[in-house]
Length: 202
Image (cartoon, rainbow, N blue to C red):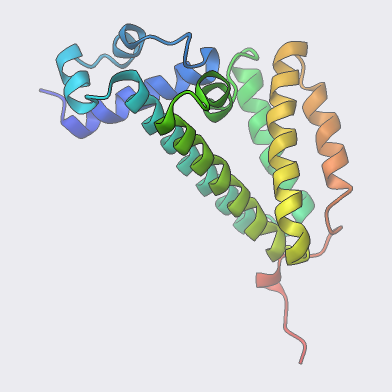
């Protein structure tokens, strides 16, 4: 049965997303993306007339959407900020370890390879980071972090995650992530439950 356009597009984007997170934009070629996805060459260029740049933009956006959803879902199932951060850190640590310390965050590798050289990828990476920061910021406010402090702490959390992932790859060890997580936990509001579960006081 012929593969649908939507199915082919999803497979191309997912293959690019994985390749970009491992070897970056410059290290990933169109031929490799096509081979990994199993999509016909003609279909790939039909779906993505902008070539590798357009595919990379789609991959960054797909990865960001999944990450923002993960942040929100983890928040809904975590009673405290400490539980929320510990759960998220564990997720990224397991993913990195399962890949043999080869798979990072696609937006990190794409940013280092293409910003500011590509206007399209610069915009996609900016949007990606802003989406992450906003999702983290909203969650922190929900856990009781003052609104005027939440954005800065959200940026710190994202920066330390990215830096921790890079250090973990260099060290081939989860120790950098574990040490960073311990420091971030000291900045969070103890075991205060998220506001959705609190009873308002007149």
